[in-house]
Length: 82
Image 1 (spheres, one colour):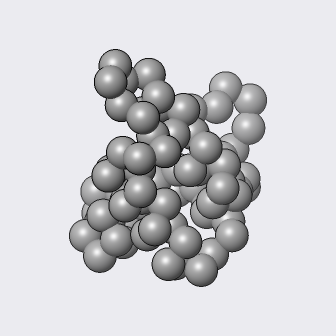
Image 2: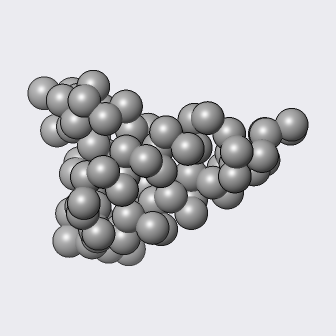
């Protein structure tokens, strides 16, 4: 999932990169709760970080919920840098 630069500046959301061998990700979506689940799983691998209380995870969670959207769409990486 690629999030636009304007979106990142406004909300401070981490861009997650995904790759698929067998499908066009532009036709796929990712529920916002799955985005948060992936984020928390990634942060749980950092020694000494508890995602449940980590300020970064809390910020992402608050920002995603403030958007009021349930689903994110994928964009090709090349569009991210235009």
